[in-house]
Length: 160
Ligand code: HEC
Image 1 (cartoon, rainbow, N blue to C red):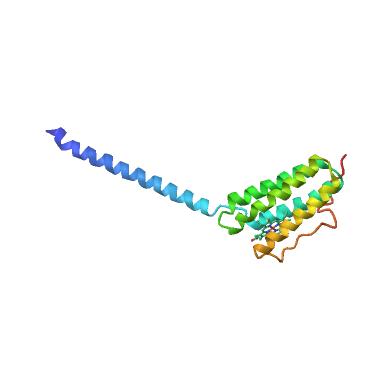
Image 2 (image 1 turned 90 degrees about the vertical axis):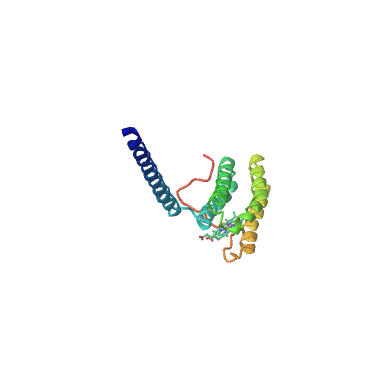
């Protein structure tokens, strides 16, 4: 008799407990989604600033025939391009990024073959690609050229 009285009450309690848990989880999910939406994500321009520095360093490293440094800086550019693909998915310009693959591979070959003449030619090809993309993506006012002076005074480009 008593059991018949308590059983529905017990079920009701456990149901209410479940609902409480779901609400708690939902509010945790909401708070995490909110945090994620407002967390810092590097923008296209942030990656480009990095690429600009690596571009200049490649020029000084290559002219000093510091081939390991050229390879390292090329890898950094590739990583930045991967970063754009990962973090800037809302930017239509992402679809033009693969135009960099050819010139980057050619430069890597010049470094591998320690070939200064082909390095210089391929560097000009790479720079032209930077500008073609800026043109097709309506950022033609960002004009990239061969650097006149090293990007930083505190880095040695010559081989030790
Ligand atoms: C896929 C197309 C594409 C390629 C390839 C590309 N860029 Fe860009 N670049 C852009 C876009 C788009 C912007 C504008 C980014 C923004 O909205 O902030 C930009 C901006 C820049 C800026 C301005 C950044 C600033 O805040 O002052 C520099 C510098 C730059 N790019 C350098 C380069 C260099 C150097 C290369 C080649 C090694 C290169 N870019 C290749 C698309 C490209």
